[in-house]
Image (cartoon, rainbow over all chains, first blue to last red; front, side, top):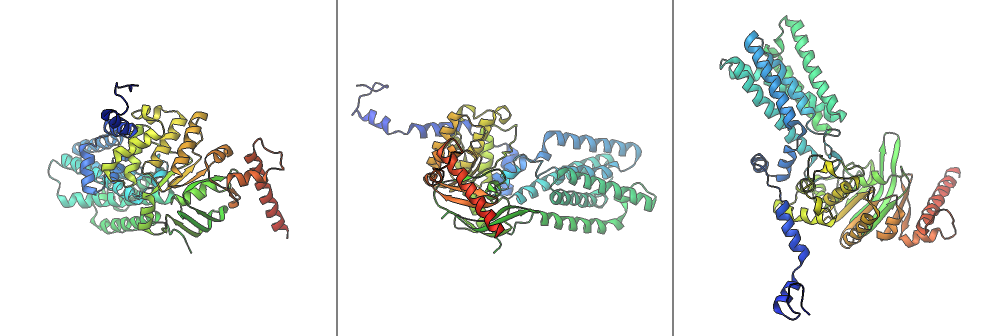
Length: 247
Length: 255
């Protein structure tokens, strides 16, 4: 009796075919057909982080999604235009609030749909949170620097930029991250960051009579750094490794 | 033993979800039965290292999940399907399974073949490139099972895996469970006693945060031979075991 391919039992060709595990062959074919090819950015992140998994988790950041990026660019561009036309440093006043919202929404229950599952993964959720928060901060910093450079038409000194809004942005982002992780609520984190920044701007204005005092007074740098360090410690505590099995 | 649990407890505020569980399990399929609120999901979440216990000791795959590096090693060899599977609606089936293969720290060269094999094992090959938002509830459950088995886990924890599956898919899934249980420890939390009868080599029945019965499905069915509550032997055994445990608790409380 001939096989469906026309070969006969006992025929070496027939024996060869029967030895082939067709299921395994199909899986190999499917693996090639379904294989996802990481983009240039993911490959670069994978090399920098030395972990393809962490790179993939980074690029799945809710905060780095296109709508959020567009919103950030629009807000900072509007701030730059206002700064150019009025002379008021609106970019410096807007950037910390925008970054705080982005950081709060970078990771956590309610934001990441697969958060529960992610908590059981070898690549720890703390690392995922850290790289996502850093990425959001870096994107905000670059966009803010670009907007500041545009508004200042090249006149802005590096020191002014750093102390003007990068330091307050660090403090506000740390506050947002700490509240988001402690309260396990992205909305609470974003609200705390933006409210904290609004209170700082308004109270600085009341104290000095200047609307821009929160980003121009050098005396505030140390308090900002203290707040940033305290909030970073609180975020580290909130995401600490559980003690595991008490004896 | 892949699972060694002694006097494990977990409290959420004033609610004692797990109240001193002792459990040992080697390769095979262990069915975790019990009524709503019995503590099955909390126990599975602790075994999945998602939440830490309030007290007690636990060793998984011969390691202490309380220490950082052993826990990472456990997680590399762990498969977990939570009760409520969150997913990214814009991901395809393959992208979702691949995402968790990478988060499990699998070597990236091995990932495509492992993903293809897992997707085929849950019979979703025809939907491999479909977006998750287009899938039915039963298909999403199978996607969840695929991500759980993608790393060929030594410890597989499945919380209500057959919820949403149609009868044909449940039969296939039970066969998959029996196959996985040949080499791995599979712990399945379920309300469906027929799943236990068909797929599990052992049963643990939980009530009020404790394990109140441990044995084979046949042992459980034997408990209910003189009962008429329930349609099937296992259901009668389930009811008998719960009734006995509750009367013992009441008697203990009164004395």
